[in-house]
Length: 390
Image (cartoon, rainbow, N blue to C red; front, side, top):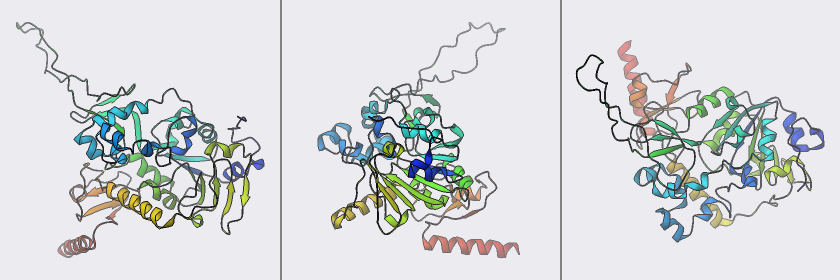
């Protein structure tokens, strides 16, 4: 294998990709599983990805799943965590090193932020500053107890359900002046199920996600989308929220070609040495095709488009609105509120009326997905409140 130059400072003008990245003042990188496949971590949706490997009836039955995506369903985990934990040794990736592309990103002097969907932590291991890395879908090396709420580190997954080992407090010890014999036997361990701190379907994204988007919106000159199909919401809407030039680095075109200003179709690491690339004229953005890239764009056909739409609808269904104040799910048709600056910061009606806010001094508006009937009712109630004051 040819050596790959991972430095952002090394002759960027000889490489159209690195030259483009270097020519912009601030770069936000949106990363998916495709940037880690070269080190041995499978992606999710390709023919050799995770969901494909779980799709056989026998595999699904052995894990107690009805669909591969149930592996990361929070409701399914609460019902029965054994399937997830039986599969979980696949998450033991501590022996793997960052890819050349991870190292390249860490060397960028104009890196504003990394928004990663990956839970492998390789961005941090490559040397990217923690303050610039937003782990949008959480992390796998820590967990929270579903019973007592305490946090624990996960050194490794064994295939067994992990349980909390903290001890319940037996109360204060007898004073030294007490005639009673000092005895503080430990009570039984908590024993609650530990849920890894990854963002299962149905859970809100970490607070750092919405806060970072609020800071970076309007300050991003270039958005680099690398190794992701942008299927999962709300991550898929980040490029439009941040603004700036849109650059795609992926094996296949994501969405429509017109969505992008520049497109590089290849295995992610291959873009760094830029050997074997050719520019194609597509009547739109600049398109470069290299090793591993798929071109021309596939005609998906009606059946494929139907399946893609079904996947999108399923993703929308799983992305339930969860209050960032109390953690409760907002029922279908119920009123809810969202911060007008922090992307993805939502509040149920109770928390909104109780004065809960994002802490950044921003305003709050009626949630954009609330039903028209609920929105109309809320506006009428707010007007009634204003009339009562006046």
